Amino acid sequence: MLNNVAKRINLLPQKKEQEFKMIFANEYGSVDFWKEVNIPNFKKVAVTLSAGTDSALVLYMLCTYITENNLDIEILPFTGVDTKRPMNHLNASEIVDFFQEKFPNITFLSHFIFWYEHTPRDSEMKREAHRKEERKLYNEEDVKLFCRGKSANPPEDEAQKHNMFFDRERERDSDIDDGYKIFMRTGREGKSGSEPGRWIYTPLAFVDKRFVAKCYKDYDLMEELFPITASCIGYEKTTDYWTKPCKKCWWCKEKLWAFGMYDGGL
Image 1 (tube, one colour):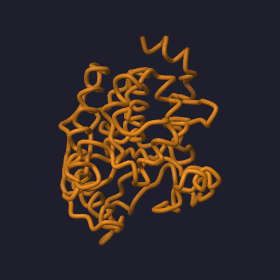
Image 2 (cartoon, helix red, strand yellow):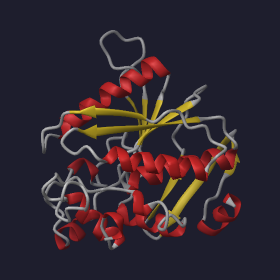
Image 3 (tube, helix red, strand yellow):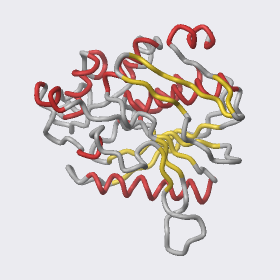
């Protein structure tokens, strides 16, 4: 089945110097998956699974890549939960179950879920919580590579048109390229006082959510995967205690802009 899907949606694996290439492409951009990843002798990949559409797509790309190339790589789903918005781990767990069923040939390690305190609008608290747990997995589980699903911001004209300049993360603008946006190493192994030398891979860094939405349609993910993703970051009052999307937060607006609907197809 995957070979037929690959032909239909322009997945083009080709061997070159003992490495495989896989292109995910549509009219909104392309992702040369695994292009810059060159880490010898690793067997585990952690995927930071927020439960949103972007990280779920990265997990799909990784699973497809491993399956098409018959690689011996284990996947560790990795989910952080804000104690003030404590429901995304349920969606993330559903997503993991979906992929385990869809890719039975891949070994999924136990879903790593951790909780953290987060002051609204202080994104650094969230990032530090993730870094702490990444270090733990690196040191205790020998996880050297972490995949993230962060995509680029909508273009400025689209952001203005759809009221998406509030809470916009400037670092996600596609015109920012510090040389480490797609693939970077944090710290140096063996250097006293530094972070462990784990690697971070962000394949969607230069494509926006329109690319993600088109991938969902091209790869037949709208019917089963999209409904269980959750992008809204609203709190209890604006979401009726997390039973519906708030339709007000930046992530709700971005999802509506790209997919034409909110969480759950609303």
